[in-house]
Length: 535
Image 1 (cartoon, rainbow, N blue to C red):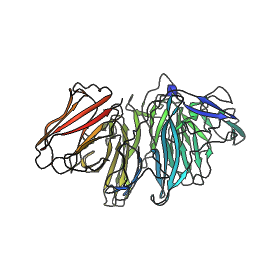
Image 2: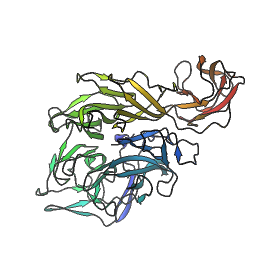
Image 3: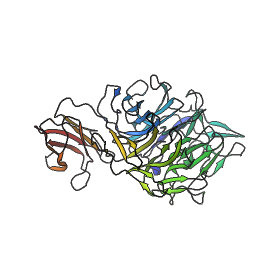
Image 4: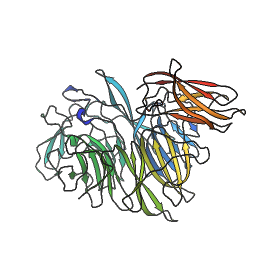
């Protein structure tokens, strides 16, 4: 399941058409990941290529990452990485969705472009590999022909507004079942392919005013997320963001209008909203859905869409969607995954949900009421600390060494935890993507430029043998002190070191746009670097 920053008050900025193109413009917020501007040439690496980790899927020692710079793969539990970026198939695109099952990896690409003076999100198509990245098949972003305006659904002929362009037709989620690959693409709706992307079928979901549909119903509505040729109605439940195929029969689809559930392979659907249940979900905008493999509970990232009684939270059902519990009210969530405990045969014996919120990761304790977060994420060997402003994704893996691992992805790096008997306690390993320093006393910052509202910048440096305690200060263009990052802190010589700046001054205020300088004192020589802030 994937993550999106959008404002549902201005939900749709895309072009739909029926016989002639019809432009619908509005405003969107920036994307949830940023593209680092350092160039990389090597494919194999000790780290992933990007620090913006938008999605993680695991299978034992196999770790796939969707990042702001393509796809990264480890087949040895993170010891080495192969990075796929700036290739004919992956291009120089960020990854908006991933899924890996049955030895097949599917990924969706996205980017931004200017349209009528606005920056809009664009679907960049899909890729898949059946041989661990040795070869890739490239699939264009699914769109309709202008004449694709009718869909047969049981006894009905449903009118469907064709989506003929890729603007705001971004695939935000992918789920593989045994017989099909399912995608949700915002304006593109819910689609599936049963022939590895050769053809795509649009899936009919209930309009906003119906709580369920089945093929034997007599139906009078159009499949359209915005008003168009077929009427003035715009159906939020036809704007899709999340999908989870529990198996070939049970499919969940999250929209801007609620959670849809099918038990017959995506033919008939029942919809669950903020208003049609006694104990409902928190909000109708659903950007993520997961099902716990241990107890079958359904977890969703639910946000406020349009209703005045809606709010953002994590919603969970333990009775097949009949009722919902809500957690973290008014918090912005991105993802829900699960920490699984295994026996010696690799069978799941217990689980705990892990929620990725904007402000951190939280794991449900065994008492079922207490949520725990890691105090600090610090590499057990290097002392490198992971600091981020958005915490996007989590995954659990049972590795070949017989140990269970947690993987955590943020907008500023990746972390792996080999947990001991206590929650969030164990051996941490932190991964930072960065270029090698060419010489001692060299330094640079990444990402650079950076936006403090979305990310942090990392200052990478080394110290020579004459180093003592280290002080790093940030100055503005007039060389006025803005922030003392660290002062007289002991740091090891001869290794790559990192310090993080959140773009704030000594008083906690985010600094203005512009060029800033940093000074590193501690080695035999004083070292300087430059950072550009772009809010």
